[in-house]
Amino acid sequence: MDNGAEVVAKIPNSNADYTTAILGVPVPAILDWSSQTTNEAGSEYIIMEKAEGQLLSGVWYQLGRDGKSAIIQQLVDLQVLLASKPFTAHGCLFYQGDISLNMSCPREVPGDLNRRFTLGPLALPALWEDGRRLSISDYATAVGENEQAWVSRNAAPRMNYFRDSDTPETPAEMLDLLDKYLTVAPHITKCAGSLACFETSILSHPDIRLGNLFIDPRTNKITSIIDWQGAAFTPLVLQAKIPRMIRHPKFLKPGLVVPERPGNYEYLDAAAKQDVDRLHESALYQKYHEVLVAKKHPQLYAAIIHNVSLQISVIEPLQVVCGCWKDREVYKLRSSLMRIADNWNMLGTSLHSCPIGFPEEEVRRHDQELENIDHVESIMEAFQGEGILPSDGRVDPEDYEILEEVNRVQKTRYMSLATNEDEAIIMEKTWPWQDWPERLENNETSVALQTSVRRCGSVQ
Image (cartoon, rainbow, N blue to C red):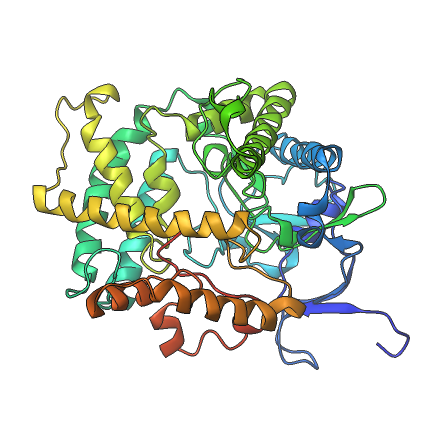
């Protein structure tokens, strides 16, 4: 601006205003807003102050244990605050004047005494559903049918080199999976209906990560939280999770147990001990998060534990079905349904036998795909641990050109390990820090590549 002030302009949503005005969450101040195109800009817009503080992604790995613990405490306080404002409907927040009465929910939004906000349709990028009171079974069916309709209209055959280097995966395969999902969804949700967390709806930030948090580096206080546009009131159990910035890269036994180093720790060399210490500290941060949540909000903790339990998760298919074709996560839906089928007798449903099944050849190909994905993810974890490339592919704009060159060099070295031409092709196609072919074809990367090194959508 002429006076030196910095602002951010983007497509509007009312979540940020609600979280700061009603709940007191630190978000950038909103300076101007329009939900109409009949303005001088010719577009809907929101103008906000630039977020105050320093981006957490720039300092997190340099923080000591006390600094990280202080930030984890604040994140837990945020999760507890949002989970303490339950609602009886599903949908996205709108200003009262920005949505027609026939699309809004008549119930009051938690804490909104002046009735500025209302609940309307879910405006998430991957689906569109009415903001109305739904049971968890209704919700599960609605998102499955939405995905079914999207795949029928938009999906096309494509190569998935984690699964097969010669034959493309097809929309028909995906639609078959969705038929299986819709067959079991009413049963698996009803068998868990006694859990209150399956029916209570809450608002939650959809992506708590280092790149969405700003802090005061002198005090380690969170000064701003950005990217609220994906927030929505949906069942608590679908939103109950450990923020990915503190989620341990490997599975941890659920419950309030203290992680321990391996028994052979004292016999390891210095480099190996350093790796063990790094992983041990990561595990401690996740468990610290769990302890705080368990103390401050037992229901939220129960939902988190349900979602990370080794026991068969009846909610897992609901968590992955929406957008799984576009996000190249078909394997996640298939895995969740296979686990449902394998453990049907443990679920306590009204049906004695599972109504879905998977042919032996499909199981074999699926297992091969998971093995290939695990191999690539191990590379990503190693690169993250060594500080070579971030595992989620997100970087600050000023670091992009340097890391783009690092990415090119590392990919060349990786492909030099191929023993034949076919193997080289697969290694090239499954390299994780690159754009998906369909996004390149649709010119969807011109902006994204200015701000981040994108990772392959098949590996999440």
